[in-house]
Length: 383
Ligand SMILES: Nc1ncnc2c1ncn2[C@@H]1O[C@H](COP(=O)(O)OP(=O)(O)O)[C@@H](O)[C@H]1O
Ligand SMILES: [Mg+2]
Image 1 (cartoon, rainbow, N blue to C red):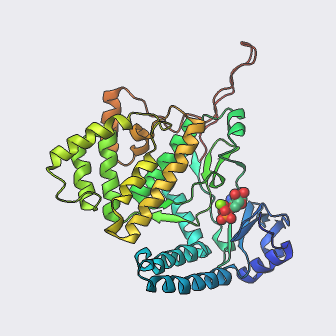
Image 2: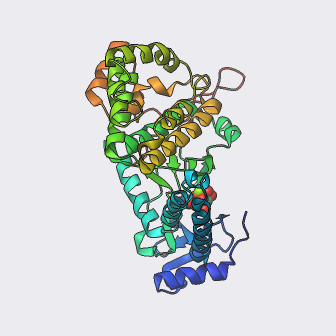
Image 3: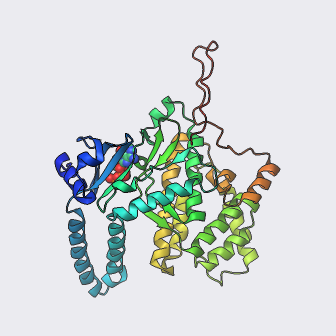
């Protein structure tokens, strides 16, 4: 943990930002931070109306300090750029990218806005009741302060806790992945930092996304290409659709050969791989390799695709722990809202039942010593 800012100083930032005395806005403020990282620290509090909340407070001077560092890096990058071999690195471009990403992360108004949009989109199709994100309390937010609903639970990587609570890890993962997939392929902005501290399993059985400091969004043509690839993998196995999509976004060139022949070759190599469980093949790694082929296409598109591949790798790590036999490449559930009719038809043909919101996350506990204990009743889905 980075050294925490003192509670008085943290509270002074809140008062300054909101333009009110803390006592007028909050019934309680916990001086012990829940977390203190490089950009922000988080304190528990209670609003005057009794709602438990947290305040994510930006460290004083952090924006100035980081931008000072960025300016120094930019000067170095320009020097490197003047040398013949250094020029090939495009160092100024790299620093410009870093400048954009860093300042997005420092912009708490943007973060709160993205969090609200992500949260609203979770329920866009009327399902996903078991996944949430903290509600932003806008009347207590400022440029350096995000006030939001307080959640109670454990980070996803406390795998022993997860197992001890009898949580169906595979179902939790599928539900979380489904929301993430819908965000990237339908709504646009997706969570770009799904490390385990930012995904929580809540005490009430739901799972939550936290921390919207880093988000990605695929450019429209790339989003369509990834959707096309998903349709092929999940629904009809027609790899010519992938070849055409990859040609449109420059992963394959127009002159690779007749589409049908290339498709047949790809299918022969890839299709058996997609039948394997995640422990045996990494979709994230596969996508990263594809992106290598596309380097010259344009920095922005590449950044977003790399961000997608990184998130997939995180999810694969969780799958290895929580659901070793799970195969996300063929899980119709993930694209249920992306291709509704096709998924319904494919599921019926394959005799698959997709989980709905009535299935609870907690497995009924095995009765100790055999009989004699009734399983815990399933909780009703929240919300
Ligand atoms: N809504 C919340 N409810 C409860 N704890 C929270 C909430 N938001 C953040 N926290 C706590 O603060 C930590 C840091 O918050 P996060 O948004 O991830 O900030 P950072 O950008 O510093 O990672 C979380 O891992 C969690 O422990
Ligand atoms: Mg975080």
